[in-house]
Image (cartoon, rainbow, N blue to C red; front, side, top):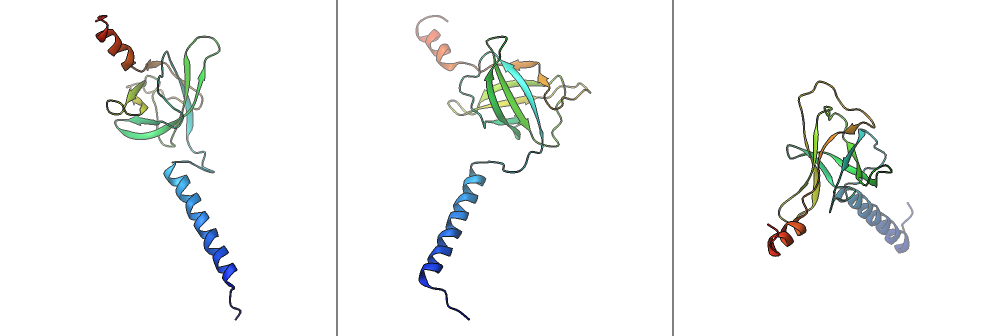
Length: 148
């Protein structure tokens, strides 16, 4: 049996370390590679201040998807947010999408409030009922400068 040289042993050790770092980066960063299960729906908001791509989408506090993209609508000055929903999550066509903040100054996320309609949304459909983000800065400035 042939003995490994010191350089070969170090090379294998470094390779295993890099693979571990890559795995942890994907898992901790919540990246999904080679898994395109689920579907995308869209929602239009007048303001999404602080919302980022990758933000959580929740129903009753349970993560059910992520913000996949944010674009400006070509026809109106509104933000079109693409939501990538997990497989098995069924949204009705009367669901309400709201931009919320976790905590007082926390991250923004999308909260979905299901409705009672029997009709479901599918790939590429649009959520018609939305509530935009509350702009804390404008509320504070109104209070400070006597606008309230």
